[in-house]
Length: 226
Image (cartoon, rainbow, N blue to C red; front, side, top):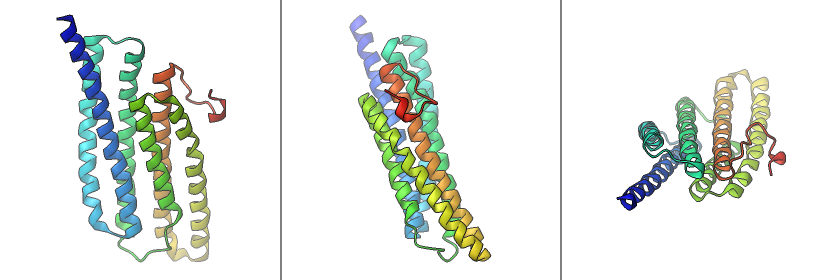
């Protein structure tokens, strides 16, 4: 009997990991596809992003309930407890990444209805980095790899720098030609939403480090983290 209980508990943890990874994969796909829609000026890509958001929200509820059940019935300790509580925090960030993707979608709907302001160079680069950070954050969670999590956190600065670069460039457009202001503001908002996605990926990495090492590194400069 004890062996069956132990096997069922192991299966619960494995399923939890699988669900978190699935939710993360959807959030990653939303980020990739909404940026592609904007860059390619292809509105046909947008409805699927909304459909994926519905799945993300549903998984958020299901995973949360699964975590509560594991804590209530299994009373995990040590690493297992940190694994489950990390999952509960990670899915909050994944749901918010989905929200940011929808914010980008709404800006894209406006931008695709008007002539392009300029070729998009820095924004797709931001999207690529943010998406890569999210993928590596999830890989770090699944593999319990705190070193990968730490390396991923360091890439957040690149996204911040690109966001500032986008703002400076678009500010030049707006000051020289006021008619560009609505389009420029939408692109600035897109860059801010991508920055937030990278921030959420950073949060996930911080949760992974706590899960593995039992050390809370929030609010510490990356260079101070051992």
